[in-house]
Amino acid sequence: MPIIESTYKPPFFFKKGFVSTVYSGLVRRVSLKQVRERITLNDGDFLDLDWSFSKEKSKKLIVLLHGLEGHAQRPYVTGSAKLFNKNGIDAVCVNFRGCSGTDNLKFRSYHSGATEDLESVIHHAVFNRNYDEIYLKGISLGANIILKYLGERAVVPEEVKKAIAISAPCYLYGSAKELHTFKNVLFHNRFKRHLVNRLKVKQKNFAKELSVEDIASIKTLYDFDNVYTAKAHGFKDALDYYEQCSSLQFLSNIKTPTLIINALNDSFLSPECYPVKEAKQNPNLFLEMPKFGGHVGFVSKNNVYYNEHKALEFVLDY
Image (cartoon, rainbow, N blue to C red; front, top):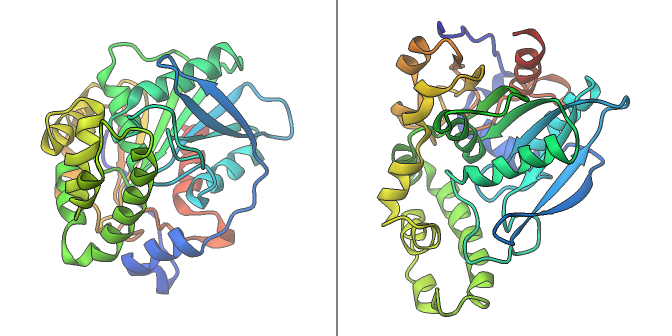
């Protein structure tokens, strides 16, 4: 499809990508009542799902996936859930393995290409919750998972009608390199600190798989992916993980109408994360590249973000 011309115009102060990113991640608040459900996965592990509902009984559902070291109460997730609930669509905010406040049971956890857990959530929504229209929305890491899920499968459940990917790191190696640059040092160090702290908890239960010395050797996010992500999830090393799990290679196969919104001033994204060629060649792929917005920082009026409005509009109008 032709590239979508963006209409996003942020408040003046939020034109700076760093400001909009930090404000949206650390300052924004969204109030939402959620009900937690724990489901058991095929490998014996579990996922915690946080549900919120529209006033009227609905057969429509939006599945929301958070980003790296996020969870189902992050405002960039609950903001969408709240807006969709107000418009007659139920929402389930997925906590990836180990992200709900309780460590998961397995040595493995989650990563940018772990589409099998999304598949389990969709199966649960269709066969146990009886939803017949499902929409997917992912943020950052969650966006890459959704794009990969839609493009790597020959058949997607017919109940999955549309998808939205926000601030999607379509090319993981490129995004990894960006996160290791000086401009992103604060973000890099924050992510690394959270990941390492969670890994210290896991190491106590999996001392044979991961030593204290292994954790001490982690100085960068790249180290984390070499020491843990690759080892725990069956990849040769970090580069193999990035290569296999980047959604960019799967975009041409997507048959579900899908909207990608990646801001041009997103410091986490490399040039390859703006898939213009793929969007022009695939009639199911819509790409919007606002000039502003940073990383998941599409600040707008009344605490409803531009990307949230656009996601609802895409679901209702296209």
